[in-house]
Image (cartoon, rainbow, N blue to C red):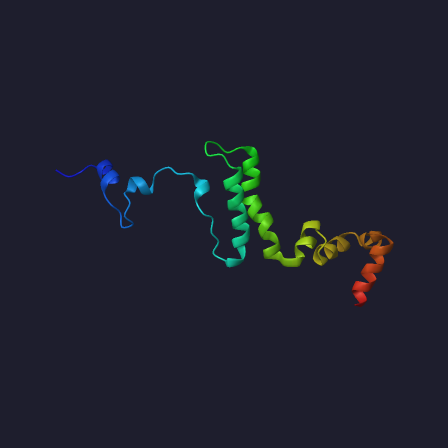
Length: 127
């Protein structure tokens, strides 16, 4: 007589040399290496991996761990790589497109830049 599914799950060798029970056993997700398909994002993924190893707890996930080891750290560490020097303009919402949109709604908005701001704007339009 044949084996049951449970017996096959525990004893049958998969092509990798492990049984299905070994391959799909419960494991710590923090030990899994994070990878990116692009080489540029390797550094943020390494930073997140180091944070996961040092901060995390195996039994439960704390609120601090959620904030410091999840997607947020990858996004913050990867933003300069993705956006380059525009990251400062984007984080302060001072891109030229945003300024033009604000000025189109409120024409007096451009006059409220102050003395140095107005001087900077004049230099930007001439240069």
